[in-house]
Length: 376
Image (tube, rainbow, N blue to C red; front, side):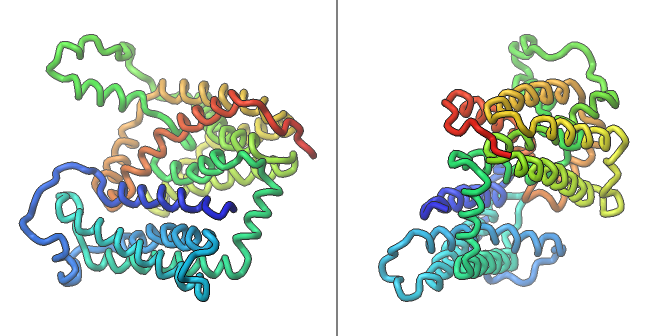
């Protein structure tokens, strides 16, 4: 890992924390109380184990990235004797200040409640992440990752690695079709129509005249297969060998299946974790693996071209179908229930991830290929 490469990641994750903490950014009001009054309040009346865990887990990556960034800067003045301890202290201070600001600002949002318990758990999560980063650095695990990355991925892999790391998080938001990211057309039309309501421009809106029909099993199978095929192809554009590609394709399908089951369990309860795994979905997953195996020996530029085609077909078929009423109820539970702090972020990831991949691949294919060969 480059000595400063973790700083942009820490900054990006900090921005995500701000987004998740202040979503939905509407209804701001002044309650005529000091922003820091929550620090002296009693134990909150309403809380769940999920909320407690979320407040800790949400700040662990922030503490990890901040401490790692500080440790790998090199030649840090004033901290030569105890750089690891200083990294933990700096990360803890930054995470504490960020959480303090977020909780204070939540006093002005009607849908959020500032809490000293949340603040304490955020600080604890930051500390856990910072200690974990220090332990991994001291144990040499970070250097092992750097060597692993050099052995498995080409030098220009950072953008694809970020997209692949975001893919499981995008799958956490409920999808109308398993692994079906990027279904935005219906909601986009509704949002534009609402925005243009009571204006003459509404009549000019090019909405689809024909009522959308649910996907037939064959179309659902295709969407699931392409949903599994797309991340595998994205990995193929940065992996070095055929055997690495095969392992990655199988691992990607396994991760996608596990995260989709987790999303179903969070949305409908643990007993329904595998309710989505119907026959078309199972066949689609198998078909996605077979397509991935057929592309193992294809050069990276060919994989990128196939990825563009798969994305276009996937998004076209997926956006021809409406969301079911059952799916709408699931989204309402996310919007109004305990997932409110993750709803906006997860939703945008689920909507925009395939389009971000589309832009990334277009930029990749516009540049000359430096490493065309794929060793076995």
